[in-house]
Image (cartoon, rainbow, N blue to C red; front, side, top):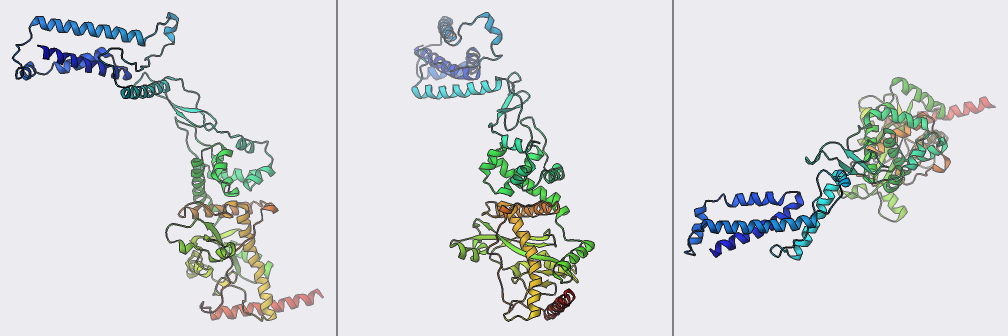
Length: 523
């Protein structure tokens, strides 16, 4: 008999403890008590009392014993429930009933009964869980503010959440200032100030935004407003133009740092896909004839279809095969290890790129990069017949590549030829100078991943072409001097074409006689 009473008392203690725990999840203690009691009494009675009979010969409980225990438990539960309600529900006026939430917030209360006093560790843990529950209910019941992007405090998601009375979940967004971008995007910003920030006029910027609209435009969601196309393009162009760190770009445009980095890569990819086929392509037959005429009027050398130059872009030492990107010339000048990748560009008479080759390691000389480039494939496919590409002394003399004389003791004809070649070389070198001067990210050591860097460098070349075609003037203080690019290589051992040597000598002879005839006519 006494064992049965102890069992029921222990069962009630555990039921009470679990009842207080489940109140955190807005369950009724009486419902929990009924569910657990139903579970306990679902066992066959003979199994429970057989376990008791093995240790005690006390007969089964009578109906009177059952009535006494049931009344004892019922009275105990009624008293404890009344005490809990008195502690948890404060008195309120009838006027406050309408202001109460649909589902009251549950809190954990320290039990007052001696049978269910928990340990201190359990109290602390329960208090933490109470804080979690309060935060969850408060977030789901609070009225959401108006949806906004960047400058707002939160965005909303409509619809029910967890089945709790159709509450609305909110996505909190850090509030950032966008005053700088709003000013530059307004009509009140002067065009000169806009050009200093983005290296182009407003009209050119608007044209780029219109071209990229379909590629970079994003739709609004229920969580937040999409970033406008103009702001997306502006983040990329400003980052390329100034080379400022992402933290500063984030502060100016009111966006997150990771968001700015993502926008730069996305817009550069769109520039490569959308704008490169329109603004950076090898000229067709008619355009090539115009380029030859323009170069001929500048230098006097016929059939020149382009000027080539290769520059180096500093990078962080890659983890794999870093020796291939080691730039020895730059390292010797600054006295610290330097690594770089290359940009080989061919320009027309106006300094607009017609061909680029990006991404080869900085340890390769110019002639090796030329052999691996698509420009050599064009010659093999017959696209450079009767066309010269002029390069500096770092390139080989071939049937389609024209380079200056490098040996000492030049003749008058050779000297005049080098002067004419130098005028064409200067066009290519000045174009690269404007490329690096206009896009400041090329002047610093790039932090872009090596596999993503060709896309960014290609976007800079395309934007350079757009600015050149729209006659965008570059400020004089943005001029950038080129270092460590030219590598003069001796003619020996490079497989110079005999036919190319004879053609170059013939061009030099004709230039000399032309100069003499011109001086006679001027007299």
